[in-house]
Length: 599
Image 1: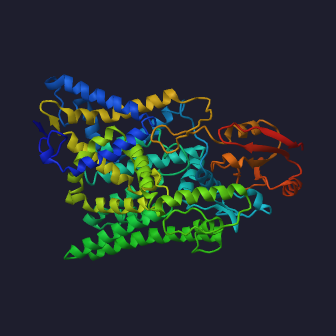
Image 2: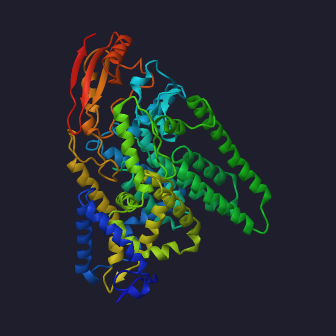
Image 3: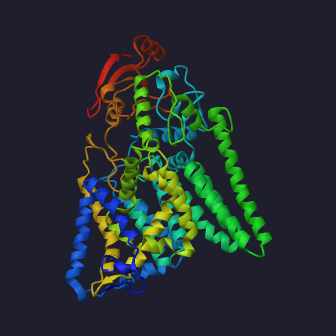
């Protein structure tokens, strides 16, 4: 007979005490496991978990574990009761883990087009600008996710770029802004969890994020983003219950700041989260018979100041880039190039491109768009999104929380959190790609779900076998073993691979499919360089090479598109003192330089 010490839901031996619907969640997880068993060491994680279960079964009654933490965790339990210390421990752990992995997982360089766009904006800010003037020969420098007209700037909002710029200012490299954002997310997540679970479990959740997000994930090992949006979500969701209890200015300002971060990273998902939380606040006010008017006015005034100041700054940025305070760079990019086709109601518009590779990228966007607009493609698109999300946030070990889904979601105390998470999840499912960073505003909700599931799992046993406590205690060690396995298998030479992994929690590729080796080669050659890039259209794979510094003319190395002999000659006359090279970009082949003109 299996029991759960007060929780009426466990696994297969207790079918009458658990909703059968919970087991349905294992089906897509099992499919994902079979499809991606060779990614992120899924097979090794399954083996380790099986070994843990086998060892516990063999130990039987001799294993005296309970749901309570072991004695050696006493200092951590005491630290968890101190709010500042509890939030600081996961943040510091996140930083230390990433620093410890540097000999194997090096500081990344940008690969994906989105990364180059965020970096351009960060460097623009560091130059004291909100946007860069358009180049006289801008047609040669057009690139994906970057505006060339009316200004030369990123199409993205400023949130990720601001943290990159802070990293450059504080530590001398943009990368440390990414590390800072992840550390702050781990701290804010712990603060959020403390509003809903006991302090010890909140600290456990923060440490889980530090290991799963802060060590080897692409949120912390690329410039693509994720942690800033998750930080904003944790601030909004953590401030909500505290604001409802006290109506004080501080939680109101935290909530407003979180909304600003969401607006500048994931505006679509952030807007939905903001609407749900705002409606919940209105409902709370409606249910209160006597409003604390003075405190409410102070809280609303503080939030209005934060939103007003940052809102003014956002409109100044938009005006500098697009010429209008009410036109987003994203909108200009969509009108100019016809992408991104993020949402199902966005119309595929015909666009005449100057560069044939742009036509191919547009076809790629259209193919992705079909996964949210055509009935035959929607199931495949949904399964792909589930697979990415499952692999990033859960994996094999954390699937153990799924049997408790109905009990977790049925709790009244966290109902607003689940409603907010569900609303944003539905929004993400309507989007074109659904990468894990799209889910970042509700990453705190996902971690709360996991922690609540682990709390219940820790109470479970099969007869005399303490299977639940064993799995809970094994979670962090198993993840750490996977990180060690990742570090041990990183190719230090960074050689190209045929199937790159850019959206992983532990195995993010940072040294392949890019132009970095060629950049190092050019940097070793004295003088200034102009590189004319030609693409092999038969093998074009959307990975771009034409990205430049904010001050193109002042850069030592300039990349430009091949536009034919006449246009190329015009470009070379514009740069008479640069050595001119040609590079042909082919998929799965290391590019080489061909000299066209000496200085």
